[in-house]
Each structure stands twice: as structure tokens, then as C-alpha cells.
Length: 320
Image (cartoon, rainbow, N blue to C red; front, side, top):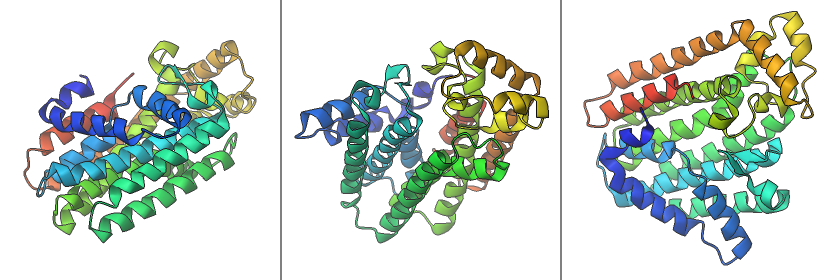
């Protein structure tokens, strides 16, 4: 099942957002515009706008209001991707060269900052101080997460709670806020937007854990980058943390650097798989997914419930 199939019932609204995203990354600077368009055209699942739209359907759905929230959150996400690629010194994203690889780190950082600034412009058109307060807090947390990601590189002895806090800031927070702000933009009751925030948080945690699993279980063609590349760049994720409970495997993983070649990474990946760490990681991802689905059952009846459930199941159970 592809996400594009799940989006079929609100394709026109997503097409509107896609068109406005193109306008949003336009710039008087040809360099910044070219770099921004390169990122935009690399695609993406547009998960955050989708969650904004669906969550708003629990209330008074008005696309002209809701789209500004969706735009702001997707632009923040795009900006964070650019910054992540600089932090990781990544050459590829979704199978295409990154901005910092095509140009350089300075161009990438300024592009990310430009996209972030554009996101805030969209929020100024929404006369709701609660939306602004919650979004500002989320941006602060995302920025802290980027700093923490730098600090945690090649920290092989980090506790599990450190990893979970990092992926909350890296991924789960923006998905949670997408659900929450979409519901607030739809003027839902507080009990509804609070539940949708928790739903989005649990989905986001499951989503990122699954992504981290796929880094070890998918092919280079599926990933658009070499398998195990996250670990090679110093990002110690859940499968590696579980695998390092075996002292012999830990000794091997601790030797990984950005210079580790594909052959050695293949051996490391096999060691990680042999410990059962992949299945342990899937179990934790499924626990987060089950929590999200339980919260969904608590929400009032809405046409949004079924697609939210389908998207949640797709996100949490995907294998490539």
C-alpha cells in the first residue's frame, strides 16, 4: 500500500499545498531558489501536511486557514532536513545529491534558514496566539535536537532514554504538533487537540524507529544511500544500541567511523541482525503504534479516523 493511494480523498487540497510550496521557496536570489527547489523536487511523503489536514477535519475544516499551518510545518521540516544533511555531511538524500554536496555547507545552511523564515511568514496570517505559542516552542525543541544530534555523534555508550529523547525532537515532535495545530486551526475542543498531539507523538516515535531499522535492513537502491550510513556518520540508533548489549558486538561497532567501507559495514550489519536487535526494535516501534491506535479510538467519530488509522499502520509497519 502506497501513501499516495491513502491521500486520494484530499488530493486537491494537497495539490494546492504543493503549488504554494513552490511559491514559498521562490527567491530573488537565484542560488537560494535553485537550492530550495532542489530540495522540494526531491519529493517526500508530505506526512506533516496530511496530518494537519486530517486533524482539522475533527472540527471546522477551512482549507484557507488550515493550509497555512500545513505549509509552515512542512517548511520547518524541509529546513531541518537541510541542516541534518550538513550535520551528517551527507552526500545523498532520497537517492539525489544533497544541497551541501552540490554547492557547499554555507549555501545549505543559508537555504535552510531561508526556508525556516518563510515558514514563519505563513503563520503570521493566522490570528490565533495559541498556534503561534505552540509552534514557537516546537521550533525551539527542533533546534535543540539538532544541537544534541551533533553532540551525540559516535556516543556509543548513550542510554536508551537519550536516543528516545533525540528522535522525539528529530521527528515525533513535528508530527505531534502537526496533529495538534491542525485540530486547533479547526477550532476543536481542547480534549481533542490534546489527544491528537499524543496520537502524533506516538506515531512519530514509531515512524523514526522504523526509519532507523530500515537503515540496516533495506538495500542502497531502496534507501537512496548506502545501508548502515546512519551509523557510519555517527548516529547511534536503536538497533545498534540493542546490539551493543553484546560486548563482542559492541567492540566491533565502536570501531565504526565515517571512513568505514561498505564491506566492513556489511559485516557490522550482519552482526547487528544476528543479535536479534532488529526484531527488538520492531517490537518497540509496534508498542508506540499500538498506543497511537488506542488514542485514535478515544476520538469522536469523523471521516478522518479511517485514513488516520490506515496511514498510522502504513508508517509503523512498512518494511522499505
